Length: 276
Ligand SMILES: C[S@@+](CC[C@H](N)C(=O)[O-])C[C@H]1O[C@@H](n2cnc3c(N)ncnc32)[C@H](O)[C@@H]1O
Image (cartoon, rainbow, N blue to C red; front, side, top):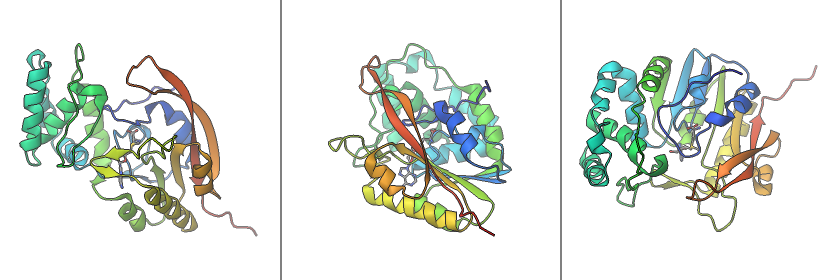
């Protein structure tokens, strides 16, 4: 079994455990594109010469750009927040307030990493005012992910990071790219609200526009793979794509002991095969 590179962030919906299902479904290409990069678990394990990595979360992309540019100097700076006295609720809330008052800077990026590792379940949630509002996580010994940060820094040298809506990324692509899309999933139950990331709600219209974008790229010769829940509505949405469905063990409540299996799918929108 191949050992995979771990991301340095905890991220809701992270795809680390699905890498072996995702990678064999896309052909090798010099340009790897992820419009919803999150923690970058898939990118970290792809061999491509270049990558375009996008996410709508500004704090995430700013952290990546800082790490890409500054490497060890930033890693050393960020480590200062990972000390025992900062792993207490009152200190966490002070640093969270400091994060919310700071503009884009090294400090904000380092605190974003600190909050990710000390906040509840690695969640990333903002209130209506755009303030990060995840409660304290109560971890025994949050570790500083130095090695994973170093690996990310190295791998990021071949990447361009952008922070925009996924549509803008899809529209600019030309030949020689392969695209992996990991959008917020369509909720399993109607009562479950649409996933919110960085204060943005990913609506059914967003899901539809993504499927349309994938079809248009496939027509241009660019393969696009999309992950989502395996639901009837999703299969209809991805009509014409090659579907691969599988079970995934998931934690479904805040009690980490409650797990159940959920069906997910990978939909491949591939260029039309020419018939001669
Ligand atoms: C399921 S997560 C991706 C997880 C990632 N594959 C990983 O392994 O860590 C979905 C990501 O989509 C981003 N996102 C949500 N709406 C978006 C939009 N309209 N355009 C671009 N990114 C968006 C979120 O910020 C989040 O990071």
